Image (cartoon, rainbow, N blue to C red; front, side, top):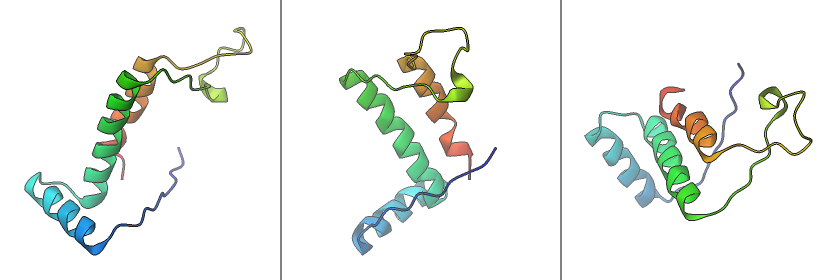
Length: 85
């Protein structure tokens, strides 16, 4: 499995708050940010009607041309984020 880095720009103030939040939760800043992304995605899925097309390795080869993830499948994929570094 390959991993891809994503970078975001934070102000000094935002980074310091994130760093302190991470320390108080005994996490690295990267781990905290990944956790916040996954939790935020869960809220976003509850609040919107997204249709996310499945990547090739998750598609049923005998299925329809139009295959989409269920909300639960998306949540399962992103719930593992805090543990990948």
